[in-house]
Length: 386
Image 1 (cartoon, rainbow, N blue to C red):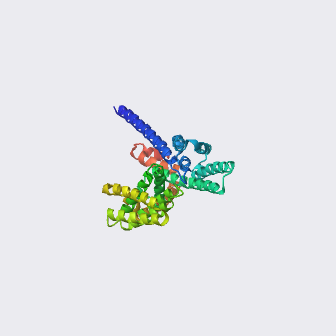
Image 2: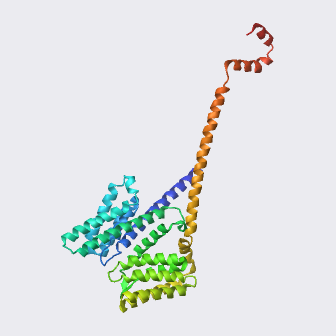
């Protein structure tokens, strides 16, 4: 019976592991498609290559297939270069898969994404006799690809750790936020009469972080989303200032309530838009902010239970990490001390064995005491001295 239960449990665990692997591969495939659709400076899309350079090896094929499909769906006429980059990244990952010191380096993913993007960009630039601005765009694209690969690899590493999100450091939290911003950028091209779905999501996330994360949450999310969406188009540089300033002001008024956060963000964003853009862009900005604000107002408070610990307990998380390291260090010292005590006890034991090891005379004397004392012939033996 027990053997049957063990067999059933083993089959169940195997099925669960298989289902988990399939679902994870699907997630990496879909993520590759979405990330590849994120465009910057109008028509450059380096983030799919960054994603392919950062994913774990066992999910590399799914990620490569997803990014390749995403590039084909994005720009079918210009997808050859990015598909070549993805194939090159796959080849580099395969060739270096057995070199642990290389693949475990923090610079591995950024370099794997940077070099193919830069090489193909430079070749196409000189072949098409492009101007210096095109070469500059190529360098910017390669740098962004390497930077995004670093953030992606950090996020992938964090997803495998069994730590609470509240225990993440500021750098780790920033990596998560920037990864989310790149995913949102894939929806930036989905627009209705100039109203971008991606920017609506960015405003919504900034408001949520500001409301439940305070000044830190609003500033971090506003700067990250603004930086990502400002490079999506050459004519939207004002978005960086608008989202950053809006997130800061919304965070300052977060203690007053949701409505105060909305008003502070919309006014700040509109002021930055008026300072650096035109009235057409102002109308789009106001519509996007209003739409995101309506969604923000109707969301339940339970949403904040996930966001608040990310920003409000950074000091406690840092203190907890310091305490953990201190405990580990003390346990290491205790382990070494116990090991030394064990060695001393073993040494004393060996010394005592050598001092009190039985001799032949002691053995004979003990035999006489234990055996001969009850024998009726002991007098005869003693007389004969046998």
